[in-house]
Image 1 (tube, rainbow, N blue to C red):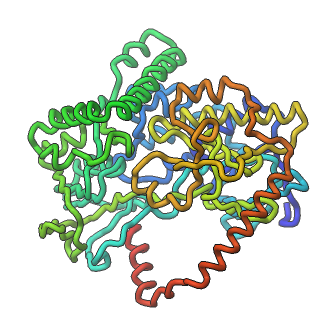
Image 2 (image 1 turned 45 degrees about the vertical axis):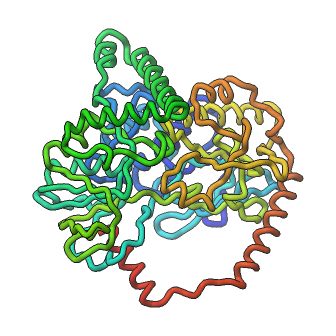
Image 3 (image 1 turned 135 degrees about the vertical axis):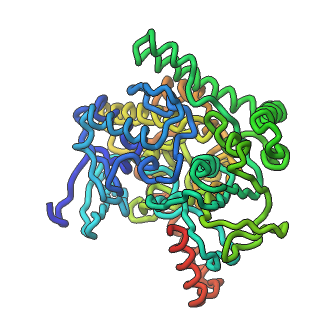
Amino acid sequence: MTNEQVETLDVLIVGAGISGLGMCYNLKKKRAHTSFAVIEGRENIGGTWDLFKYPGIRSDSDMYTFSYSFKPWTDKEYIGSAERINNYLGEMVRDEGLEHYIRFQQKVTSANWDSSQNHWLVTISRQDGSEYKIATKFISCCSGYYNYEQGYLPKFEGYDDYKGTIAHPQHWPEDLDYSGKRVIVIGSGATAVTVVPAMAKKAAHVTMIQRSPSYVYSRPASDVLFRILSRILPAGITNRIMRAKYTTLQQLSFVLSKRFPNFVRKLVRNMNEKALAGAADVDEHFKPTYKPWDQRMALVPDADLFNSVRSGKTSIITDHIERFTESGILMKSGKEIQADIIVPATGLDVQLWGKMKLSVDGNPVVGNTLTNYKGMMFSQVPNFVWVFGYTNSSWTLKAELTFDYVCRLLEHMEQNGYQSVHPHQEPNAKRARLLDLQSGYVQRALDRIPSQGTEFPWCNKDLYFKDVFAIKHSKLVDDVLRFDDNDSLAEFHKSQAVNNSEKDEASDTEKPEPVTKSGAKNKSKQKTKSIA
């Protein structure tokens, strides 16, 4: 196919991670006559689970709910390693014959909705730099929510003075030998509490530096109920029981945390105190200032982080970093920690829609002007679904509701002869934050991400049991969805284009001074060193 030719598809799936593969499976099973393809920028399936290579990488949700409902998780360890998750996904792709739909090492760079044709014209770039176009009726964006190319790295004073090795978790050097080395891990989130005990097994010592504590709780790595049921029941029935158990536990934990935060805080503290057995000060290192589930709570299997502290292989410092030195890190308290390797587990950089540029009739779609509908669609953006899982429980629970919704929506449009659909929001409607989290990666992206409304279907409460009825077992058509209504689309996006133009003109009058050569050099060095 030459560059001048345009391929036509019914659905284009962006991303071949757990969301994209799940959407692919559902379309094949429920929409056999639908033409579709999966565009994947990397050379492998798996998304996050193929990208990250840092020691100990694993799920931070139980695999009975993180796995697909249609493919039971059969391992006795229910906290899945990245390797096992990738094997699980690979098995599903092979068993279901999904590899024929996936196009590797290709990226969607832009997509423009053409109201006159009722389709998206999508530009896709190949690894060799060439491009081609696809005209698709529907886009299912399954590319996650963070920048795959680079994680978040704060500006540390003296960063370039450090003479040792810096390894960012998102670009882990697989040949890095840390045996017998002194290691510093900066961070207190899910990545940090995973890396620390894993590296401590080989390293001389690991120091975990955190600016402030996070909620960390321990669970056994395997489940007694699963071990019993798997011996006497078929895998499918066992999986349904385990899935129901952990879905209930997740939702109960979240609701209790929101309604009785002091009770949950005390419960977690008592668990931590027992696990540490006096090896570290619980109130100094494991007592966050925020309420439970204001940020994600970090899970550690079999208390591995606490055991590592008790063994003396790991120590925790809760303090602010003053600066990097040639041989380590100097803290505000004046204490300097020596290290051969520093791991900045400092978080993610939020990125919308896999970095593709969206437009409607040539007018750019600006993320922070949109309102999210049912946690999957956006105001005045036609034939577009973003698969976004839960932040307070397993990602896949919400993703599977979205897979089913897309198939139902496509069926409804086909039966009624509709070409386009979008959620319509009235001007000046009340808006609220999309993600009710205080996590750093969310706070840094507040000026870029869409909002949500104050009432359903614009407001998403992240409660699975409510969503099952409100999304899966409710009427598809409501007062919000508009079918084949291009007039309101054109009016909205033209007004947005005018507003954006006025903002650009205003910002041009107050342009910041350009970065100096020395500043650009330092920025370049910082980026290079962060992935060393």
